[in-house]
Image (cartoon, rainbow over all chains, first blue to last red; front, side):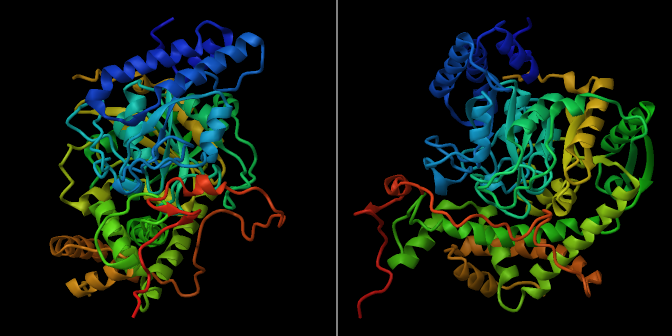
Length: 488
Length: 97
């Protein structure tokens, strides 16, 4: 057997199940890998080694007793630090929640554990999932395993880098405007944003509740599908979770893509998208057609308004969601100021970073008296138009194929003084959040030693077709097998 | 119309954010840069278009109004910066006159 840290999530699961290796050996091998590369990468905010080994031992004990073990038994994973884990610090990459230990588990954290997966740690992210580079974390940036001078993308940059650097076999991120797919693209891994409502958001610290969705990140489509199968489904604790037809990973890896109708929206291949990225996406479409799919250029007339729509709706929701950080029930309380209001203002001033403050300010403005109709209400109507554009496209096509990010990973610090340039990094991923549809990013090429991501979007609750297209592409190409050296 | 420094200060007060003078100036610049992008939305005719609050195909999710255990009080209070006698403790809200 090859080194355990080179194995897929599926292979590790099978090896633990068959008894070829113990869950403890798998956990220890990955903890050793974390010790080796973490000084260079800084993907994790907390490593939960003792808990992980205890949990791995429990898996091994259950197996030796002959008890039924879960579908992810012994699989080492990391959770983005916006996902609540009972008794394990959950900071959201923010000073305001430094050291806060949630009194309950997010539904996904509980489901992952019930499935037998072993959590090795919590992954770094932009503060409250706001950003595209993980540089907005109050705990310092994460580095891209392919080039340590580059960002891993964001906001789920720690989740992506930890998987790419083989510290874990898979991870969970959250995606409000591209925060799973864009870092997956920049780190050369697979990242899926499921349909809004597919995965429970209970225990996901809220950024923009109408857009946030938790999803899997892994080194293959099948591994991502196995994680999604474990976390998806109706949850009485999240009233926006949907009782949809069940998703199974085996449905993804069965069958082919003959007759699949691919739309290639030209709005995603225009100005601002690097030449090598366009070339890689066009080559990927050709590869899919060689397997029996058909492709046609199309147009989504309103998607160019996604950026403006997003940066009204998401900050508006954030300004409301982040009102809870007031120095009273949890998190930082700063000294200074007079009385209760002064304490709250001082705590928020000391606890939030610049990008978070910007989004709270923009959102508060967009919702304030006299501006609500012009900004928030109008943006909600434009969201309807964007959804209709996608609905019309999906009458003609089964999936839409685009770049995930207009460029490969950029340098650390390169865009940190230019908030607007940073926001443009998400221009290809924002539309799927507006429409609520699933989107996956998979590796489809390299440019200057850095991975290029291909985005495949599908119909609402049709993760199966979306991932089947991704799986077929992956089987026919070698990009997902490339591994970063992680030079220290 | 671009925001002014006074607008940023007013909104910051609404959002209970205390900004330093330097912060307010930096925020003003980047907020105006972002909000220029919002202008494109005015080109669209949204007359008669229903707003979308979220994309999930559901509304009015109901459940039985049945009592169930909630978070124990000591656990709910455990993360508080200041908790006393089973309550969240805060500075004075109203000063005595």
